[in-house]
Amino acid sequence: MTRRVLILGMGGVFGSAAARAFRAAGWDVDRYRRGTDMGISARGARWIVNAMSPPNYHDWAGEIPKITNQVLAAARDSGASVMVPGNVYVFGREPSPWSAQTPHHPCTRKGRIRAEMEERYHAHAADGHSVVILRSGDFIHAEATNTILNRVMLKDLRKGRITTLGKPEARRTYGDLEDLTRIAVRLAETGDAEPGLLDLGFPGTVFSAQELATELSRQMGREIAIRRFPWTALLLASPVWELARELREMRYLYDMSHSIDGSDFSARFPDMTPKTLERIVFEHLYIRGLKVVPDQGKTMSTQTSF
Image (cartoon, rainbow, N blue to C red; front, side, top):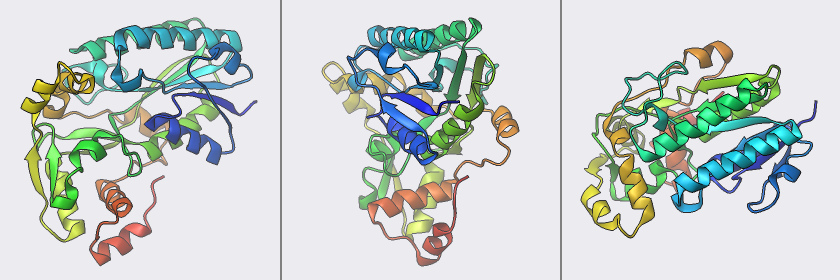
């Protein structure tokens, strides 16, 4: 079977990480270039990985359906299977842990758009095609500068503080990109064996801002404070700053403890364990060149993920 994958959105955080993971596993990786014929690009591909989002969060309502239409048409014409990184927006305020059986009750505009998109993929799978939705919480990775963890929460770490966008005690699920894309590669090897849809939740790493600050303090050997994100300033910027509007819409997720049910994931990949908070903190400190307490650095340098 061919080992060629077409990645959409390869300039983004998931797409770039997926490209590295597939190449490392010996796959031929092609990059889709925006504005070109996706059907032609997908010819000969075994998988289309749709990691494409509208630039700068612009016009989700118009752009997401367009991208979905293109992906489904390209998949039908080429015979390629489809893999999509899913998020938790579709669940709204439903009690967690969330699973493939949790009803989709989005409470935001972006959540409704994502839910409609997923319905299209469900219909495509019902027509006899292979689709994988690999679902996780917010992406994190030490080298990915565009994550919420790096852009907001750890922005002032050198000043001895972190920023929380919600309740400091709220425990949220995060998906490390290195973990996620290794899973994506393994799913690509077998996920198209039979037609249908696989909605797989990745439990990821669950932690609160308080737990993050405590682990940072322990590894750095100094006290790390927590400050609240200035939502009022963001509210004032919303009329003219599109990203501010989009971030404000998802505020509820930062106040609400949530997790993803890992039962299906563990059954499928019993040998895979998500990175620990300890490991994640070490990697984020290391990439910044920040001091780690010597015994912690020695311990963490020998730890691996999967």
